[in-house]
Image 1 (tube, helix red, strand yellow):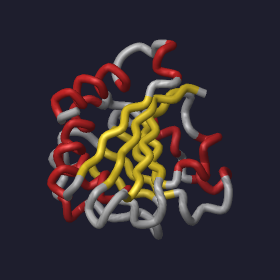
Image 2 (cartoon, rainbow, N blue to C red):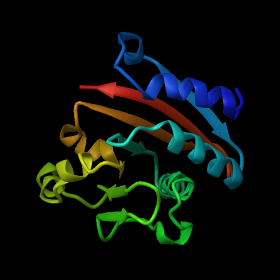
Image 3 (cartoon, helix red, strand yellow):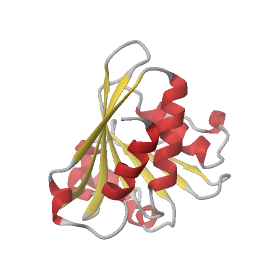
Image 4 (cartoon, one colour):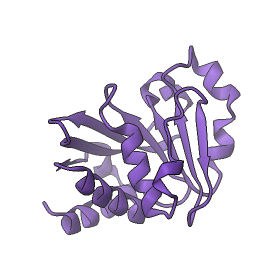
Length: 167
């Protein structure tokens, strides 16, 4: 599948009204370089609607923050503004064409700590909300969200698995 086909499939999976077939549908796409990650980020930025919450899963070093950089860059945020929110817990990028909110749940002890950050305000904030390590706060996620699992397959290559989930 090339990027054009991927964009069509992702648009069908991620946008619009929830359909029953989406329950088990997943799309996988492998990138082999940072420039391909940037191209994938641009596709994802185009197909995601404002208000979308994105759960990012993957091991340390899988590329979660790098992927948020790629999407944010496509939205007009300077790449050097996008940094890991591991120690500050949330970063807000508002210099692009739409706001991007970037959480990191890695260091949180429990759901209550996440809820103290006021995620609902961000979920309804008119932009995109990315949550790294979202599996740690899954019960706090909205009813509908997008899950992206990133697996390292080589030094610069990554496998991205996209799913649209409904609780």
